[in-house]
Length: 296
Image 1 (cartoon, rainbow, N blue to C red):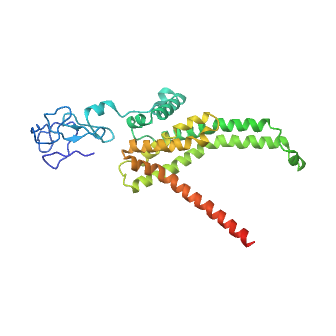
Image 2 (cartoon, rainbow, N blue to C red; image 1 turned 90 degrees about the horizontal axis):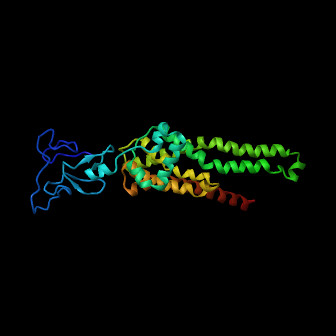
Image 3 (cartoon, rainbow, N blue to C red; image 1 turned 90 degrees about the vertical axis):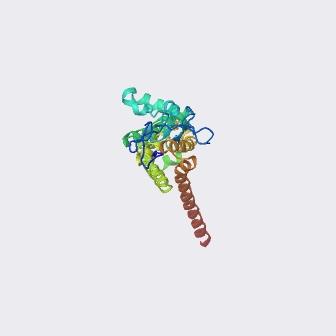
């Protein structure tokens, strides 16, 4: 966010006490009784700008700029530094612990976590986190199904009469769920890229042009942290997807610096459009089949 000098058209660096172009001091004394905004910490000085976080007025002495470009008062700048999540430190912590700590931070403290982390990250890091979430999300459920298929008698009597080998039927069942486990990370990668692309396009159309696609991808990937609950059988299929969409709103709001409305638009417009298209397709298919049945 650009900060203009009150004395000339030049831009000044937050924290500077004078303008680099005209040389005028930015520490201007307030006129008592004038009604002008004054610094919350130094009421004898005029405010240069309000804090983007708390809204408090700040003078040139108190004003700071975050790595995201936000203009902050000194208190907010010190309280909410931009940092890294554990996943960004996986070389130091190890991948399992970094993944677990990141998921727990996002699940238990989503607003605080997304508020303090840096918005940008590498594409590989984001996709790696999304792939691991997809794998963990279905592993326990698929493994249980594999066990069930392995111990079931196999083909039914009717199928045995048709020459179906019970051992082959069990092997096929186990293979299906084994393939599911292997394919989950790949499907998760493709889904994350597609959904992030749609969300970023919607945000671009809505006017958010300040951040690159990597920021949207990072927010989408990290918002999939609740898939950790997929370690509980069958949980990830019914509860977690809706939880992840809600976290995506929080992620987009903080990483992109958006309002709640724009963040919700970016996170929800894609799924709603998908439901509308898919629902319309199913409805058209049903109507078509009913029409053909009526003619016959």
